[in-house]
Image (cartoon, rainbow, N blue to C red):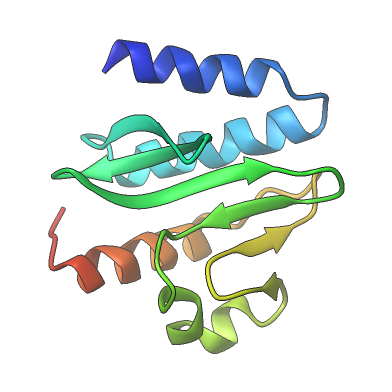
Length: 120
């Protein structure tokens, strides 16, 4: 949806570097993994939906960036894979200048998709 994509472009344009480029890299990675996902704004933050269900999102904060799986159990399921990052029940925090590794994003997305019973 073009309107939502423009909203995400606006969200990213409002960020200072390196936050903007780091989140732009994450956005490209998610779009690569989920090329047919709908981009949207959910709870004021960029997100990606598959078959109407939110699968992934991200946000910028003052001192960190967050990957949001839109689930309270995805990060706990991935234990060792996310152990290098600070996590809460629903977010994975990462540095403003270090994009998440593609293999980790693939695991995060695949875990959420499986949880929702969705296939790519």
